[in-house]
Image 1 (cartoon, rainbow, N blue to C red):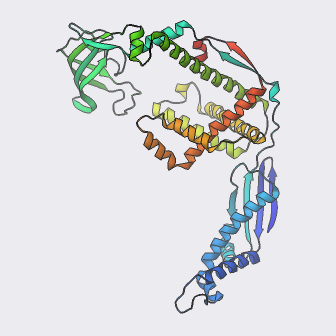
Image 2: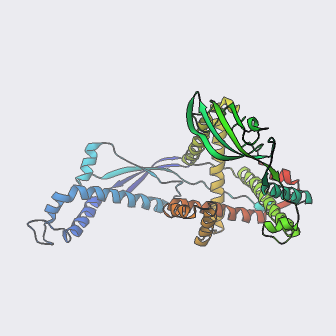
Image 3: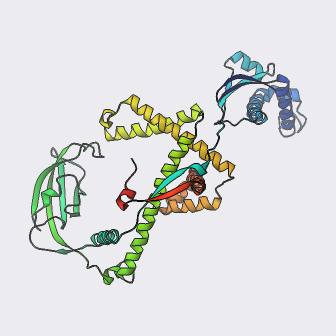
Length: 445
């Protein structure tokens, strides 16, 4: 086998590999000898078929398999011998000359192909002890707990039938029939629908049109579906509704106390407040972790400069761009609606793709240097946590992952990333900065 380096440009590598015809013919002879002891041909005793006859019958098809195997084995050997670290599977290109290919298959010519790939860059990992990071933290105040209790009370409101007209906060039971230009539409008719006025669960104008209605009353009105309504056939259309109000019930809020806590499975109001305080604390800790992790990743990105494999960046950009343009299409928006242009958006998302690839390579090298790994037990725990996010569909979700090993493999990435982040945070200088709970929980820009 002869290997010639035909291109070296930054991270790019292109090699020409030549496998002599004698090597291919020896491989073919070995395959024919193996086949001789197994094949049964009419007119020949087992194991007595002449090699020349076998070659005449099966030579070309076997040589195709020999060539495929030779390319697979030799390309891997080239990478190993050269101690290369390809950023992705090398691209193999054979000659497009059909005459030359025929000669190779006939065993009369050497096999030549090219390998093109990019190697992983050499990365000098920064000194994490020099990192100074700020971690926002927030204390849980009594007012935060009071607010959470109030939300629980609101979520556990009961309703009692009442006389007179309905008002915001009342619950109505209605039957309705809708049409657009006299034609019924899917979802436009329903019976015994419960509506809490003021919650905004229906299209704009629907709940407002029922305020002041009494039980037994019928109301007819028009309302328009929003332009971005998810059902395209209804978006922007004006519908007529005929609504029969069957019941009107007013809200009855539970009294905050030990009895209310017991309805939630706790012994007392104090116990309820302790549970809420713990939950809020965990929520704030998760938010603080997320924000300091974001700062850390920004710092890691800024601290490392090296050439990036172009194909990795292209692949990441294509995935991001497809998601973004798909979102715009579904929302019926343009780049102008987003206060940008396509060229500006492409540059922005190219930068994001480069950041992701750079951080991925840095995190991977840190993990490799520290011999970090993700155990099967950790993957199983992540899978169980994922399954629990779909109550009532646990079996379907489990079977989905069971039938898609690649999806299970994707569970490893965030576990590995968190291990690397934890390692760096332990070495970095992290100071806490007290902020309000609202500021802590506010989404990043």
